[in-house]
Image 1 (cartoon, rainbow, N blue to C red):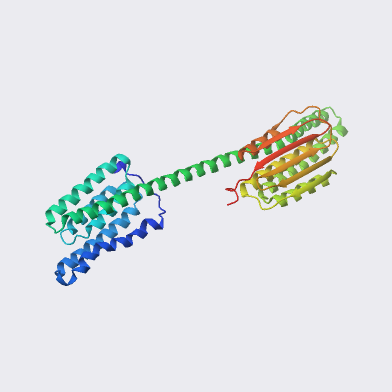
Image 2 (cartoon, rainbow, N blue to C red):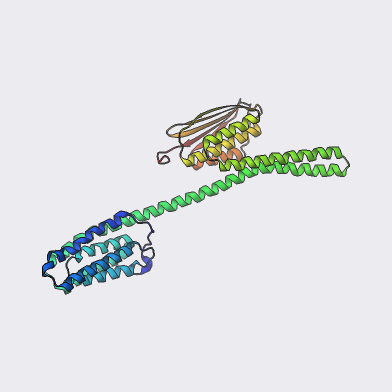
Length: 367
């Protein structure tokens, strides 16, 4: 068997993979039952082989490389040799089949089973033991059971590895989505303001060259105001990134609207939210409030946030006429964030603008 075809194992092991070692004690029963009739060297060798086998088995279970075949062969050699001193090796052969089922691919399990069967038959023949049929029958029953357990253990391990890989991929996608969100936010915050600063600075330069100093000074003052406002927006954005608690974010956003002289009504019904739902919801509400600050003409709005056992509902209403709307980075970003949780985001225009967001909450999220 090629060592390149064994399946690598993760470092973490389940207790039940080691707990069955207690049943290896059956190996010692033939020696204990005949203790008074056996030579000392037979007893010593039986115990020595048992200790060596246990050490090899534990090492095989902790083997993180593809070199388990060496340990597999060494355990076969130990069992073969021990059979000349005790018939209890029928138990240990079963544990070797567990290693074969747990560690090898389907094709190489066939080779492993053939190697075990050959070793069992050869040792039984050469050891010249009494009751060979009982020895072979016991070995077959134990090996078949533990072989099946080994295959089940491998399937469980591979399933968990795939789950971990999927979780890692989701984390990577979430990180990418978050970077895209930050990029959108920075574009929204910096893009317009920096463009305005550049245009006004150029205008001030031209006015200065035309000796229209009063107008130039006025443009320079506006550049300074824009720069201060931009600095404030950047600080608020950084503060929002650091603040993850949804209730705190809502209070902060409400204060920002009030400072900008908005007549705003907040209706919030919240319990404990799953972390990922809370994070996405906070980003969506922040984006919705940012849109209100930029585009609301009446400064009269309402924000409703309601949590049910199955979903989180967010409704943002701007009580201003809305005849047409071109969805920009803000609304598109809200849709993308909702879709990350298999939710939805819709908006309507008319006598007023209404944004409706639904984020599902599953039982798995609450675990």
